Image (cartoon, rainbow, N blue to C red):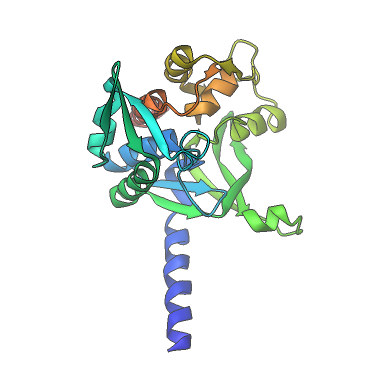
Length: 258
């Protein structure tokens, strides 16, 4: 029995990884915008792999606001919660609350059921750059990186890479620094995040969601940091709409062969 348990895990994980070394879309960071985008892309028939550095996908949702595990969602984003079967309650002034744990769990479950393969405790340490475009990721186990072990990574080929790493916009920063590319931002590089301004942050999160370079896209707080948007705290309408927007951008480009 002991051997059977181990063999089942090894075989199934190897099969899952082997099946996702070449994908349509590689998503880095399993926060709210990334999960929404990944689910929509998978529902549209695209092969999607998601790489999350921590053991728990969900990004910054879990803790709500200052560990009060409730989040706020404006009325115009409730359709996303409904799509994932997540409950919500009115809070006045066009705002609604939702249990942070239910939201995180619902988005993760919805993405997985749509066909997204989530590889937790795996991080991107570099991008693949070929013929003038971002063509994949260099990945390694997060504990290997954290411990500073000299272990070579693996490579994943992808037609599109989505940076949804949150405030640091790590993939975009790596691409600009290491590949020497000019991003589609005002400065050609990482502009940096502005301070908090809730309504502007919600708006700019969606507005700054874009293709930064052939093969490279950005969503959520990574979009704000890349292009200089405001932060907005535990309100998630912009994050959800950012995921919807970037999924459509990627689908359009994939269908056009771009």
